[in-house]
Amino acid sequence: MLVTENQSLRQRKQTIEGDDCAVLSEENVSLEEPGYLSSFIVPCTLHLAFMAATAFFVMHVQVATRFLSTSPPLYWFASYLMVCPGSNRWGYVIWAYSAAYILLGSLLFSNFYPFT
Image 1: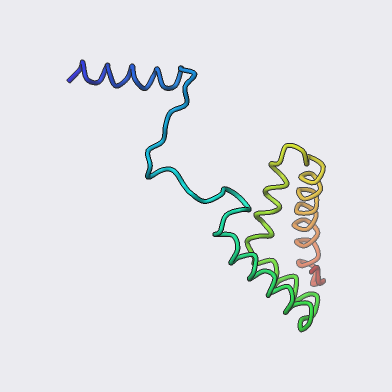
Image 2: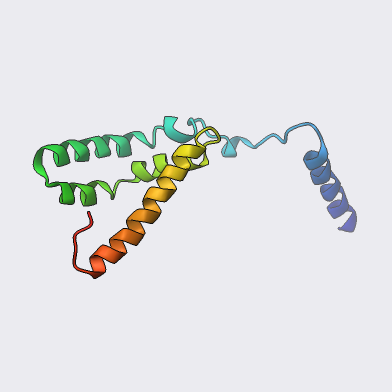
C-alpha cells in the first residue's frame, strides 16, 4: 500500500515539475469555446437585446435602468474589462463608477432623493 502511494506521488510530482503538460481525460475536455464565444452566452445576449429594445421604446429612464441592470451579460462584460490585461483604465472607470453609485445612491436615498 505504501509503495503504491509513493509511486503515485512520484508520478504526480513528475507531471507537475516536468515540461510536459498533463493530458486531461476526455470527459474534462470541452468542445465549446471559452468566454464570450460560447454558445451558452447567446441566449443571454439575445435576451438583453430584446430587453434593451423594449426599454428604449416603452419605458421611462428610471424604470429602464432598473430593468436592464438585472441582465448578467452587463456584469460579465464589466468583469472581463476589469481583469483584461490591456484595459486597466476601463477597469478603474468601472470600479470608480460603481463606488460612486453606491455611495451617492446611499446618501441620496436616505434623504428621499431619487438617484437612478
